[in-house]
Length: 197
Image 1 (cartoon, helix red, strand yellow):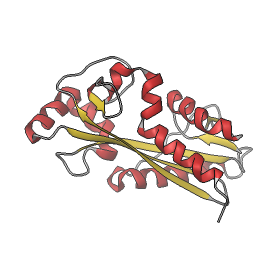
Image 2 (cartoon, rainbow, N blue to C red):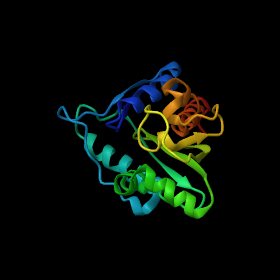
Image 3 (cartoon, one colour):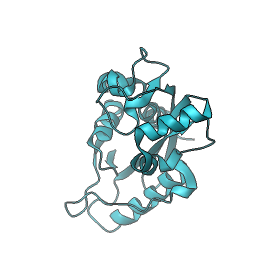
């Protein structure tokens, strides 16, 4: 299956390739007229709502083009802080821009609960079928930013499955093995391998 990943993040495409290419699929970025399309993201609907909206928009974009018939992959993810129900979630990137990582650390300290998790929702669709998978990476928020790898909340997120370092310290190789996105992609690969019902 030719899979077009609707993302501007090259790291996400590499991660998806690692999981889906061994199953016989090709993965490339969705490019229309030389550009990666921007999508409206109804963040108030949460991660699921954003991913479902993006898949609909992407499927409409390729109708009637030479890309029609390809499968579309979308993924949306965010961080969720245990001290604040369902927050920042789909608003993660906006909140980070607004108050920064140190602002997040302050809020976590005020709440008295450093538990957190990254969640990802991945949806793959061809014209006939839709596959949906979720991934979660549990961890906690550090008391100060550490490491310069990754992006977003990576310098303050310490995954349970790591060695005590933040995602910003672990490096992409380790991060990609335990990340929420990797788990969502593996979930998709299991759905694609299982016989259709």
